[in-house]
Amino acid sequence: MGEAIGQILSYGVAVALSAFPIIGVVLMLATPRARSNGPAMLLGWALGLALVGTVVLLVSGGAGPTDQGQPADWVSALDIALGVLLLWVAVKEWRGRPRSDQEVTLPKWMRTVDSFTPVKALALGAALSALNPKNLLLSIAAASAIARTGTSAGAQAVALAVYVVLGALGPGAPVVLYFALKGRSKHILDGLKLWMERNNTAIMAVICLLFAAKLVGDGISDLSS
Image 1: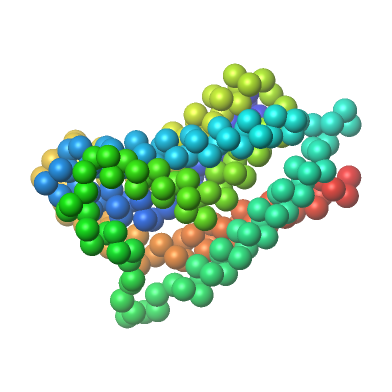
Image 2 (image 1 turned 60 degrees about the vertical axis):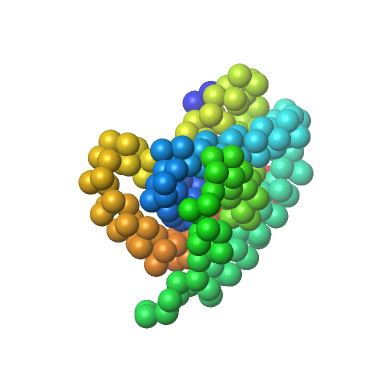
């Protein structure tokens, strides 16, 4: 179990730093339905991570090490493919980063959060974690890393749960601040929102680049062993 958990710690932290869900939760917490919409979006985010991870673990049932202790060739090939895709995402994010005084363009849904119901907030959170390319690729890579350890199903489930909890820390922090500090949290949350808006693309570009290098390197090393 320890090996499986160790494999996903960095992936969980990377997903937790995703800006759009953090900004989305902050915006939800500034609406009349803040007490229900904020936690609902956080729950949807966690469910999306869990869903992708579960599907990958089920599909990768035979991804454990071979008798020689090496991953199956298709697992190594998957690592390389995921690495290449993350490299493409990194380049795209870096090229799209806002320049010094350039206005940051945000998704249209962020302008309509006042009208969201808890169900819609839940669905949005799930979509951001399960369908957003960056988060989807990181979740697939994390679940694949768990599967390739060859540990028991129970240990893999625990490792996936740890990944989901880590990945929920980013969007969960504003919710905790909101309920803990109440009105005093507004200044902190507004500052967090502005900082994430300005630095989101650069952060994700660096994260995707690092994981792309790791995945491609691991895949090539395994295939050549």
